[in-house]
Image (cartoon, rainbow, N blue to C red; front, top):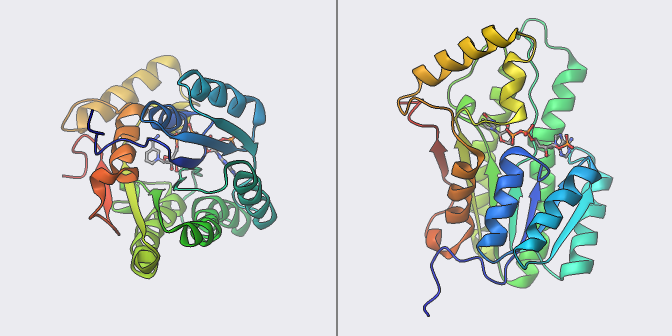
Length: 259
Ligand SMILES: NC(=O)c1ccc[n+]([C@@H]2O[C@H](COP(=O)([O-])OP(=O)(O)OC[C@H]3O[C@@H](n4cnc5c(N)ncnc54)[C@H](OP(=O)(O)O)[C@@H]3O)[C@@H](O)[C@H]2O)c1
């Protein structure tokens, strides 16, 4: 049987923030598409559950605890993956966090913490992995941006700034690393049902939370919040040969919210 252009058969994928939400859905989707998957985030017990799920699909998996904003932990992570799997074909820079603070109030410590995870971590992990990909003849990198990288929300300006920077990092790295046969793309999700999204209404009563969620859904042309799987499917396209002529691009998957 002819292989699907969307197949990830025989590929090795490293996914940051792989323990829950969009990262977890992507890990499982990649395994179903044929990839061996390494998941990383800070909490090992959550990661081990995802690794077990990947293995249920007959693929190899590894759970590695690492803080993506720390250079020493990025180095150890890449070394561990290469020691176990020999290479990395796909990197998904998905780990991310947000803080609620008006620009007038943002403190340096909070700025640094957020940028370390959302931007610096993605950049330097890409740099470390690109070295391996270059040696092995190529690969694909996917950054997880956000529609807030195009249109900021209040009061999450730092998040929006970091996500806009990821769109430019995607273009800049794609241009430099095309010579190494490394494609770099991004996905920019709109509202997706995860813990990060639920943090928006965590301090509200159940009734209020329901109302905020309903009005958010109403504001989206497709009239609903997205599911992690719907973002994972975009990542399969970007990770696979189906997108072989696509690089430096950010695909918006937001139910039409930005229109
Ligand atoms: N959900 C949405 O509506 C939405 C919309 C647009 C963009 N996004 C983006 O999608 C990505 C995934 O978010 P999500 O919604 O799936 O959120 P989530 O459910 O909160 O998952 C975030 C993941 O990142 C990991 N993480 C957080 N800080 C980390 C650190 N310092 N080092 C390593 N891993 C870390 C978390 O695990 P640990 O806490 O155990 O480390 C977790 O696995 C993020 O980049 C987010 O900005 C989400």
